Length: 159
Image (cartoon, rainbow, N blue to C red; front, top):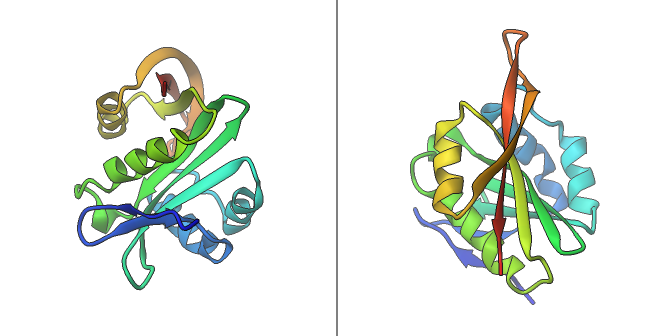
């Protein structure tokens, strides 16, 4: 069964593939201080507990992606990233929507994520999608200036 979801700006969302790993790493590095290398994305793409959703055009140029890990009846959004030239076009919204639609066909009943407390755009996106803050982790994210930022732990029921 082929999984496809519609996305804005002429894009669609489909499952990630092994050959996407380096492009995912490139996009991730543009959005995070500590970007993950391509080999790490290969590991995620090969892991049966992980799912990668890519927003791309008809020529499979990737605008953004979401990565989740599911175990038992819970899932964690490990990361979501949108290439800077595609930001502000509701790509993150479409990726989350695809993730939720896909998870509705699974035994997953709850989803978790961590987000840097100063990332207001991401927090706004997650709140719009029904996530609420359940705790925090001080010093969780390393920052470029050598300091550490607090992560908010958020969750959402899927049932």
